[in-house]
Image 1: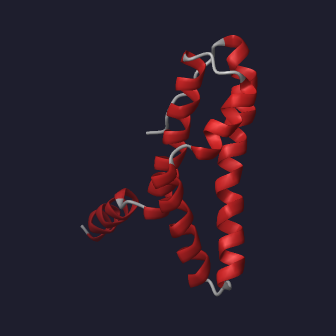
Image 2: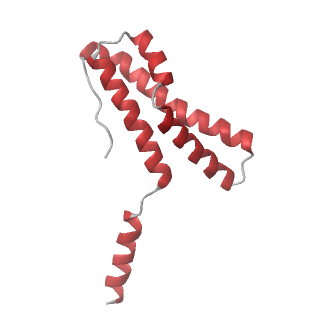
Image 3: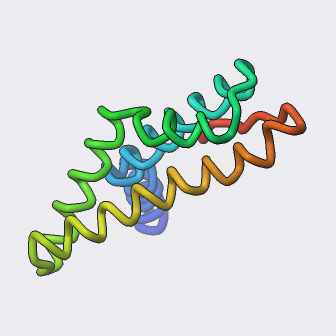
Length: 114
């Protein structure tokens, strides 16, 4: 019986939402939608870079803010936390831009995370 209770508690803990991962997924999925729209619209790669840099501002801000909060909770300075968050956000943008440059030639779309 104790094993069943422990297993149930572990299962419930695993199902709990992770706010940082939720924010990352929301930003990443928004960027994927931007990528796929660019593919549909046959956007030139040099134009897509600017579109990607300006896309998903609400999701980008939410993800950046939660990263900063997390880094600050580990003792990082505000400046270091902001730098880290900026780098993490930029990695997602750069990855989508890089993928777009390859995918536009093949009309290949990305699948959002679940």
